[in-house]
Image (cartoon, rainbow, N blue to C red; front, side):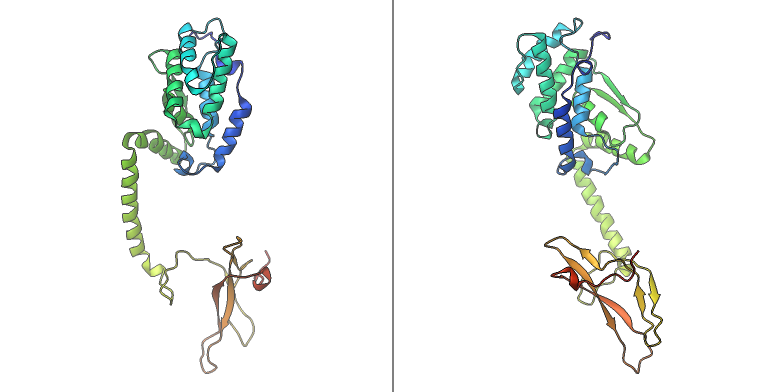
Length: 287
């Protein structure tokens, strides 16, 4: 493709449809690369995929657009429901329609869409795949989509966490596939077993035999009353969960030792399901 030939993104782009699909990605969890590791600046796959194709493909209305690309586009686009029409303007519209449809998460992994996108990238650039370079790749959305549509990709980042994400997502997962997940589960189980053994003393079983999985820590002050002296935890709220079907809260219970004992009173807690907020005691501090 001649360098002087305009790219599709220079003349038009289906921004409304792509934006809609990119926004939808935020609510997708199962099977999405974002579940591999959270990254605060991850680019949506939908927009990354769409922009890459719009930059890699030429505008069919440009006089310098290769005829081979037009012919391949007319042959391929009809297979995914994008009518290429008879004019170059019709073909441009079909390419934009494909980009918008391919941005949809439901179509992102369909073999036919991947095949069409790769074939058109090859038709535009020949047998040598174009190289996409992302020196600050972060969560890896851009290089991942570049590889999926048939490009070579170079990705790096200054953050070592990002580099680990990139290595796993762009190298290890494609190379090892499901075996990598199985190995991670096996190693993770071994680490968990060893951690449970080493941390057992820090998580003693409750009187009912249950094993705590976490602690809620709070600063404490000693009651200044001469008849008390118990340690009072400083907490703003005794609520544990406020969801409709999972309402849980703590109920403070003062345990007083026998008068003959020299032990001081102490504050224990019970977990209960309050029917209303009035049943939950106010916190011991307000800020």
